[in-house]
Amino acid sequence: MKILVVRFSSIGDIVLTSPVVRCIKNQLDPVEIHYLTKKAFEPIVSNNPHVDRVFAIEKSIGEVLETLRAEKYDFLVDLHHNVRTLSLKRKLGVPSATFSKLHVTKWLLVNFKWNRMPDRHIVERYFDAVKPLNVFNDRLPCDFFVDPQEEVDTIEKLGLSPKSYIAFAIGAQFATKRMPVSKMVEILQQLDRPVVLLGGKGDEATAAAILEQLPNRQILDTCGQFSLRGSASIVKQAGVLLTHDTGLMHIASAYEVPIVSVWGNTVPAFGMYPYFPLQANGFSVHEVAGLPCRPCSKIGFQACPKKHFNCMHLQDAAAIAADVNQRGK
Image (cartoon, rainbow, N blue to C red; front, side, top):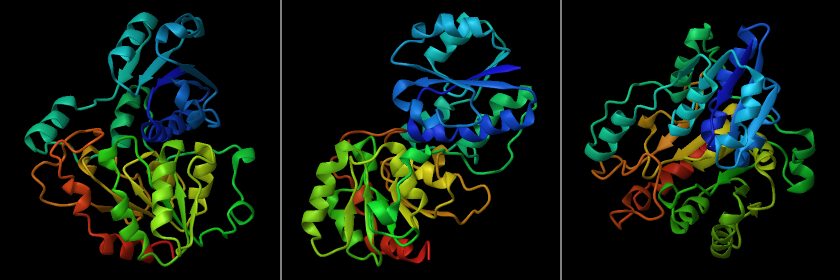
């Protein structure tokens, strides 16, 4: 049997599809699994031993359509569910199944604050798309595989032994998911172990501002220095991860690293909180309760629509720091 799994973006969403891929591979025999994504996210699946072949596009499915047709798939698992995947399914003409994005339910939560979201993690909803294949959730964590050449020796590269430090993912795609520097500094002042800052090139200015305000704290800035998989290796060796609602949060859950998550404009009710099927207390959530404007988006904005940004400014820095200090020891 040959199956095409489709998820175009983004980091966290793709990591959260890994249990589905693993269960297809382990529960159907023989099976060949191909995965279609965007080129920017190809490294997330290219090392997955459960995936036999990866196809990646820049913008259009037309870039790979004829190649996909030639594969003659038996089934297509649509884990993205958008106009592009609808077009792909029509053009390939193979049996398929799709998970529900619950657009209306999310719209009601964002616009009217009516929470009608099911109490189900998105991983569980992904598995709805493979029920026709008689594939079921094995209740194990997500997978994230790092090439041995990209593994980071923390003692050699950072001067820190594994599990002795706090990893802090300071970035997020949207500004309304990120704490302001002042709040990050307030938390960092109260932490009791060395801290490694994680992020991409776009987070370098934030990291520099943090270091400038905390010259006497043991903080190592790795922003922009490692690939995503290199940063994942650092997360895997951390004692605990402090993070916003972002991709590294889901990567940490794959390694069952304790997580302290801080939520701004988005809410865990959307179903994309850390996935810890084996330990319910593997993570914690910090959010400002009772804000009438939250959630203001299911994704995020580059600035607070209400101008006050209370969902982050009102976070309890002392409670977050105490939580981080307690975990991973």
